[in-house]
Length: 121
Ligand code: AMP
Image 1: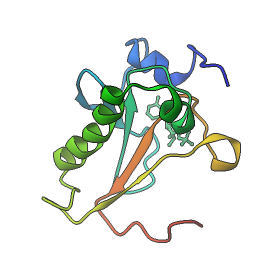
Image 2 (image 1 turned 30 degrees about the vertical axis):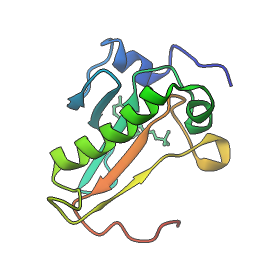
Image 3 (image 1 turned 45 degrees about the vertical axis):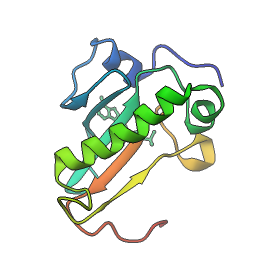
Image 4 (image 1 turned 45 degrees about the horizontal axis):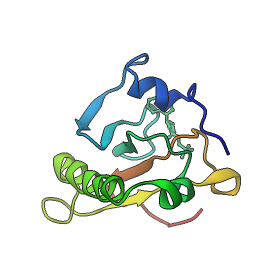
């Protein structure tokens, strides 16, 4: 699938739509999900234009890959849900139609602050 510059996260990255920012660096932007499913529900997105995790794995540079993974850990620590400072969390990325992906810019959901429950419902 071709990357759509008009997707909502692309607009957030360009500053055209506001977000409740948690963290930002060279590689990632993180913000609170607008419709939280758990006590803590954050999103971590790469700054590069990647549709989904498959696209990212095939086309991102090693630096971008490291940056995204490190970003997830930094955000989890910041939110107090990492295993270092909290009780753990779930990182999840929906990929494509069967994965239930709604926004076509790669994102990881971080769920925490309470028991997350069944892995798949
Ligand atoms: P997915 O189904 O994995 O593509 O998840 C998309 C997520 O983006 C959903 O959890 C939405 O609630 C969230 N979302 C959509 N628009 C916004 C927005 N403007 N700010 C923050 N989160 C959003």
